[in-house]
Each structure stands twice: as structure tokens, then as C-alpha cells.
Length: 302
Image 1 (cartoon, one colour):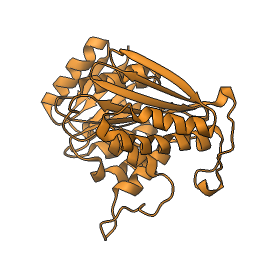
Image 2: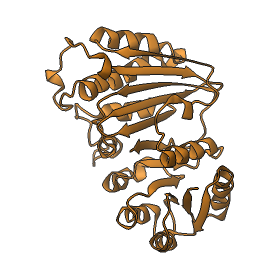
Image 3: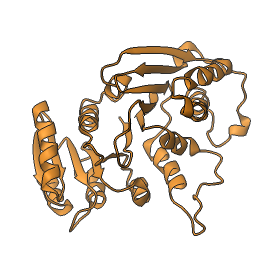
Image 4: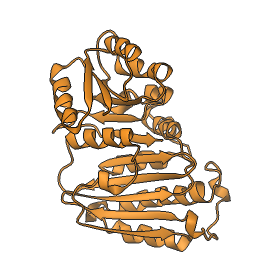
């Protein structure tokens, strides 16, 4: 049985989260603000903490930033109704990479999936992001021709109006997965990358795509595991935060924009990392209207 602490100043949210988690066998404790949550975290061990951001006395980011010193193994999840742009600099500063949003309707499935993935350490695979899979396929990327073919083929996986954008997004993700992930080349020296490569089978980039009842998803997995969550947060911060002229801080960056582009395009972007072994980037596209509200940020690392 896992022990979960819920910290929120809205009784309705606490009640909802408790009703979601208890039936799955989790033991749930609660606190009404970050200061009270900190006292509980000092007195008891929790496997996972879910905290709102905006609260009196101590906000959720300040609260969760202290948890690694108190309980290094405790997973941290933020819950908010605000946009990530308001907090991305603080998230990057404190390496907080899992932010669920109070969308409409309330993201019950995302809460369950994220909590289960973190506690079980089973963070990979399309099954947790696409319930009731109707069909699925997979193939490997070992050459540049494979990469180009995959981008063209999978572009048709999206609705017609989004196909050109999907091609661009896939090219960004696949290029980084191949050159940075599998071939272990420096990410900030793309001018040195060339197309003449053959990746061994055991290091090939794997693409899997699946169709569910109300969504479709594409996952891209490299077997390098070089990516780190603080790196993703850094590059997202560079694109989300603007300077005094209203331009993104990273407008002239030639590296790192792929994460921002991918998140902007997809209905859900999920990144799972097992350091030194593999990294999986998953794009989810809803066939129906996506839940209203800010998109979550889900970067899981084990």
C-alpha cells in the first residue's frame, strides 16, 4: 500500500482526489496549505505528494522544493489551474517536472495514470496513455532514410489539418532521438551531424503508434537515456518566458525548441526517462475535443 499526501486549500479538490485514489488501495492524508503539508512530511513518510500551487502561508512550489531534503525518495506532483508560463522559471529552478492541471472535466484518468506510473516505476508504454487500444504497430529507425520515411508515413496519422505540423514535430523528435540519444552526438553541435549512419539493432530508435476509442498516440524511444528532466525544463523555460521586447528568451536558440513545438502541437506531451538506458517521448492527439484548460506537464524520470 502506498501513502499519498494531498495538499490543497480547496476542500472539494481534496475530496475529489481522495475519492479517486482510495479505491486503488492508496492511503491518503491531507493538509490545507504548504506549511501544514511540510509539517506532515517531516513527521511521516509519504511515497507521493500532490500539491496545489496557489495556497496561503506557503505555495506548492515552495513546499515541494523542500521535500527532497526531507524525504529524497518521495515523488512530487503539482496540481494547478494556472498556465505553466506563470511558473516555468520556478519549476526549472526546483526540477519540478510533473504538473497536472485542473482541466474541465477534472483529469481523473491522468491523475490515476500518473500516480500509478510514479509509484510502480512503470513509466513507459502507450497503454497508460491510450486506454482501450484498438490497433497498434511499431517499427525501428536505423538509417536516415528510415527517419524520413517515418515522418512522411506518420504524418497521415493526424487529422488532415494537422498533418504538416505533425511532420515537423516528428522530424524534431526523431532527429534528436537518433543523433543525441542513439548516436551519442552533442546536441548543441547539429552542424556536425550527417546522414550517413546505420544504428545497430540493439540501439535503434523504436516508434510505436496506437489508436484508442477517443485518441491516438505516437511514442518515440531511444536506447541512450541521455536526456534529463532538468534539461527539458530548461529549454521549455527558454521558449515560454519572454524578454522586455515580448520575444521568447530562446528565440535565436538553434537547439531545444523541439520540446516546446511538440508540446504546443500535441494535446498531450509525455516524456519518460530511465537515465542511461532509454527515453520515451509520447504525443497524444484526441479525436474529440481535448479537455478544456491548460495542458499538463508530465516528465517522469527514474
